[in-house]
Image (cartoon, rainbow, N blue to C red):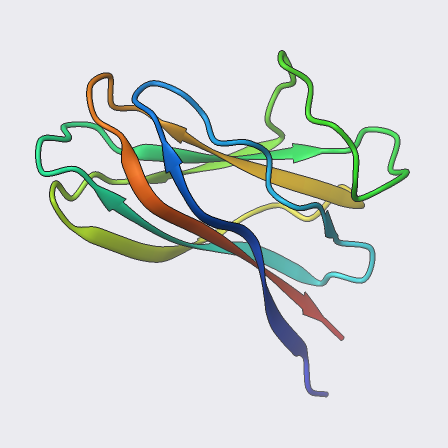
Length: 127
């Protein structure tokens, strides 16, 4: 049985100020998912000393991919991105798929430097 694996751009080329989070990504439907992860690409400033975290948020009601992530919402899963000062990094983080609809945010952990050219791709594996 062949599995479907179609990456979808969910956050496109954003800059994340020091010690803040990006806006929420486009929503992702995991209703038919057998596996799920997020690919990332971002550039750290040459003076950066801390990395980033990708937080995953779920629509608790399971009603819509266009749900709003609240200011005080707790992430249902997360993955760390190690700092590589002055370089563009890319990788993939495996995340849970229990919720029907999810969105992601990137948190810049550095207190003095922005992250630039940050993009995320949802990789939903389906039967």
